[in-house]
Image (tube, rainbow, N blue to C red; front, side, top):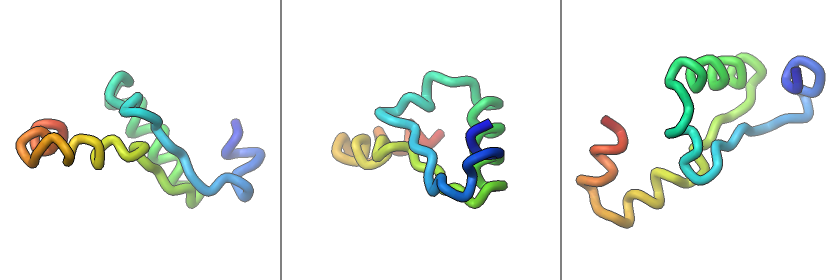
Length: 64
């Protein structure tokens, strides 16, 4: 509803603190597709950068 009514005023969607990892993949795809449809960027909230500090293997496991 927010993107339908206020889309021109929304520039980004941020999943804070890795919260996206707790949600079903189908929901994540649905919401990110909707955001992109409205020209809204999507961010994982620096979670990937947090994992990089733990080493490449940790980041690779996260992506897989």
